[in-house]
Amino acid sequence: MSVHEQFAADLALHALGALEGEERLALEEHLEDCASCRRELEQLRGDTALLALSAAGPAPPSRARQRLLMAVSREPRQAPVAKRRWWTLAPWVAAAALALALVVVWVQKSDLERRMASFERESARQLTELQRAREVVSTLTATDAMRVTLVVAKARPQPQGKAIYVRNRSSLIFLASNFQQLPSKKAYELWLIPASGAPIPAGVFKPDLRGSATVINPPLPAGVEAKAFAITVEPESGSSQPTTPVLMIGTGE
Amino acid sequence: MSGTELKGDLTDAAILSAISSGSENGMAALYDRYSAVVYSVALRVLGDTGAAEDVLQEVFLQLWRNPKLFDPSRGGLGPWLAVVARHRAIDGLRKRRPETDIADLVVSVEFDMAGDAERARAIEKVKDTLSSMSSVQRQALELAYFEGLSHSEIAARTGEPLGTIKTRIRSGLLALRKACTT
Image 1 (tube, chains in turn yellow, red):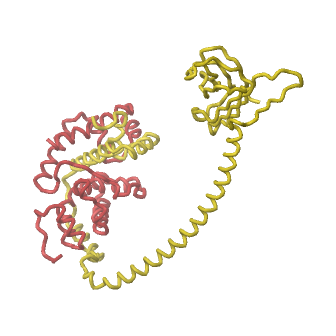
Image 2 (cartoon, each protein chain N blue to C red):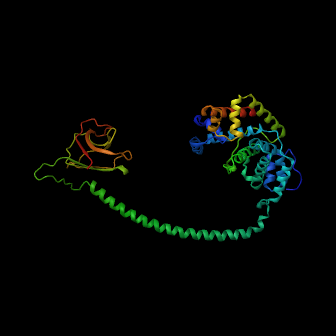
């Protein structure tokens, strides 16, 4: 059957104008997107025309023909314009079209100039913002940056991770400091712990010789609410789920 | 278009083309071919000869004023006129303003209603098919078509479940299609 089964009976009712309420609204919505149901509706309307034939018999009174033809003659319609000798008007049409075209071109030119100026302003603004963003990122990720973790005087510096997460942009920046070196083929993996469900991988990193590392915008699903972030040690290719106990964990401030 | 009478064996397309170019004879030919179909469906719905004649006038005059209302690439002229007449008659019955834009009424049929003989054969097949249906199925179709009742009104009138009414109406229309396309 070409028609979607759930709408089959409703289509027949709709062809008769007998469908109402929510069922009618649902069907009309479906018809907007479904060509095969539209075709079936047209066929069903054809079938309703057959019902009209069942009423056949009575002929209209003879005066009805006269009445219609009189009404028609009172409303004469002009023959289509195309039958006139259009070429006699051609020079005027051409001149008018040219004048109109010039006006249109002038209006479009002014409009384009305005839009160009607006684009240039916008572009300059975005360039400044981009420059500022680049400076921030390059400072965060520079290999020659001096990274200092301040701790209580005389205490030994502890490994520390700082995650900055913007949920509605799925944007995450993670800064690690004082992390211990790992054996080769092993790496730290950062996890986003969602409010519900399994931990989501949020980047694999290896600290440099000073124990520092950064993770910038790892691929993350959109809009996940984070309950916490955690770190485990995993194979350097990364794992899809933690395979070792959690080394570090932190919840939102 | 000249004032000569248009012959009865013209195609619907030729009649429509005459009407489009402003021929009153085109309207006369259209009337002679389809006035009985349009009038009889309006009379059956309205039960009043004067009101049925008004629907007849309105349907034909609308096409005269704007022949583009009917798009020949999307179906036959006869069935379209029947569907439009029935809509207008139901509007009249319910004393309401026209609900449907008739330019949106696309009607697709595979049989030809233009020739007198084809029309007579189709009428016979339709009447035979309806009389072979159960009386409850025929009643459901007629209440929807000629009285313009909604499916819930039909269910209330006949005391049957909505689902049964829906199924009867659909299978009834499909039976008519089958009878007239074989």
